[in-house]
Image 1 (cartoon, rainbow, N blue to C red):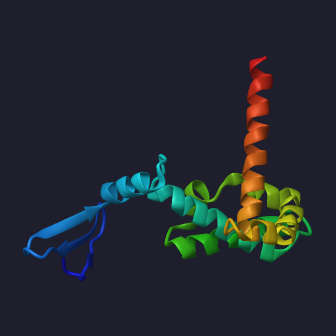
Image 2 (image 1 turned 45 degrees about the vertical axis):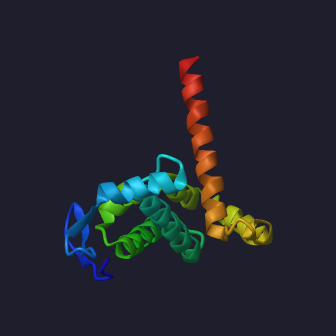
Image 3 (image 1 turned 30 degrees about the horizontal axis):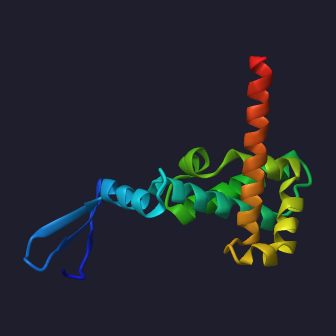
Length: 159
C-alpha cells in the first residue's frame, strides 16, 4: 500500500493507491466506523471535535481570568469562541453552536470555572495516571454538574 495520501474536500477524506494499483478511498463513514470499533462505544469524529473545542474554550476562558463585569465576560467569551474557531478551522458561530459545551461558558460567566480549574490543578497528580490535564478534569466536573441540573429540572417539571 502506498504511503501517499491525497486530501480531498467534502465527504471523501483521503484516497490512496494500494499495492495492486487500485485507488482506495477513505470517507467520513470509514473514519466514524473505525472510531466506533476502536472505542467500543457510539462515538464519532464530531465527539472528538466537540471535546477539543470545549477544552480549547476552557483554556482560553481560564487564561482570560475572572470577568470584572458582564461586558468583560461577553468580550472574553467572544475571544474564546474566536480562538476555538481558529483552532478547529470553523466560523465562530459554528464553533459556539456545535463544538463548545454551553456549560463551560455558563461556568465562566458565573465564576465557577475558576475554583474547578484550581481543584483540577491541585488534583493533577491524582489524575495523572488517567492522563487528565486540569482543564479536562474541569470540563468533566462542569459538564456533569450541568447535566445533573438539567435532569433535576426535568424531574421537577414532570412531578
